[in-house]
Amino acid sequence: MQNFKKTLDQYIDARMPIIFVDTSEDDIAEEEIFTVLKRKRRGILSWSLQSFRDYTDNTNIPKKSLNDILNLLLADEDDLTNKVLILKNINDFLENTEVITTLKYFAQKINKGLFSNEGIDDFNIIIITPLMNIPRELESYTTIMNLDTLDETDIRNFIEVFVKKLELRMPTDDLMDKLVMTLKGLSKTEIFSVLELAISDDGELDYTDLPLIREQKQQMIKKSGILDMIPLKESLDDIGGLEILKIWLKRKAEIFKNIKKAQEFGVATPKGVLIVGMPGCGKSLTAKASAIAFDVPLLRLDMGRLMGKYVGESEANMRRAIHLVEASSPCILWIDELEKAFAGLGNSNSSEVTTRLFGNFLTWMQEKKSLAFVVATANDITKLPPELLRKGRFDEIFYVDLPNESEREKIFEIHIGKKRKKDLASIDMRQIVKETKGFCGADIESVVYDSLEEAFIQKKTRITTEDILKTIENTHSISETMKDSLENMAKNYKERKFKLASK
Image (cartoon, helix red, strand yellow):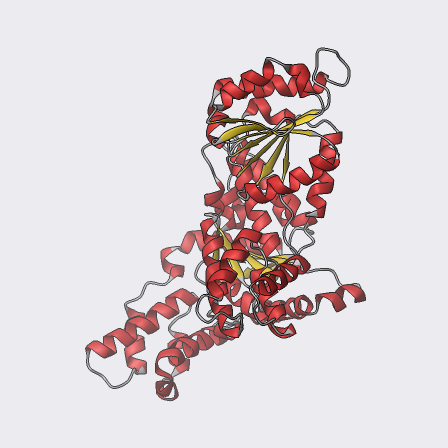
């Protein structure tokens, strides 16, 4: 928490009127804030729904409303000099006009404190709450802070303290490394809960606890309501074709796995890739498979979930999402159908909120130093703002076209091999590949599954070429159902000269 305490110290000295500490761990935040304030010999006033307390003379007033306390403090402004007022969990009060007006009055008085006798000198307000919205009236007076993310050393120390306190057997170095990586991204409170659960069955921390810890971490990330942790199933070998893209990803994965040596050699930290092109041709599958190639967790960001109904809520959600991703690194961040999030940006229909979200996202992509590799996918690149396609945002942009003959053959082999591998040798691949020109990967998968279903209903002992050809005859491919839009998309991609994902 050294960075948090150092920054807070600076903000207090700089007379920042209102400091928002965006956290649900109010007890930990309060402990760190008290450490800073006591060192600075500041008087401490603290309000919560339970009580108001003045630590200077140890006064305690139970169950007093926030409005009443603020008015009580206003009545004796001179007594606020060299003090800090801490307000905990006041989100519900930030829609109250009287509370907002009073906080703004305090902020204005604090700003005048250095230069006027009418102001309040050396006084700050610290609000500890999960940040949802900042009233517009308070925006210009407010500074936002987050508790420091626990780094690997912090987590290791916490585990050691936990084990010693409960007199457990200390994990081996290898197990400790795995525990630290698995717990990365969680708060101190969450780590304590997970470790308590892990030892509840046998009183030990061992390798058998790792799946349980991962499952709990998955739940905790889901609880954010912004990110999902996706189970890993598919590998790059499960993708038919896209050989150039797969080779590129394997190169980046090699750098990722040996990042310290790579950085010492002068290699830049991989940022991410944008995969654009035809629907149903493996873009999402590639994003999922990348996590196995990189050997890291896969987080999915639904940009639609960022949008909130309160002023400032969407931006707070974006900050929260970025914080979770940074804390969970190394990881893959998958953003699916990116064009839906930022479509229409810059025209008269785009909102200020969307513009700000886009700006925050661009800044993070440009400046991020963490091992969070972004895999973004998009169907229609024409709906994306040009700033997103500039060099420096992504390491590369790949175009995925409809699969060619060799790729269609590979896709058929993968899907048939998963279900009826013993039938592969008797199937005439050349013939079914010839009949599926214009089919995307999703079309081919559907053909295989429909053929298997029909063969089963007909009580056949195996699937045949004839079964597959019959299904193909009754299937309308994506190149038929979306003919005009696909032609326009293909023309646009070729004009932009994006790197082809296939040979």
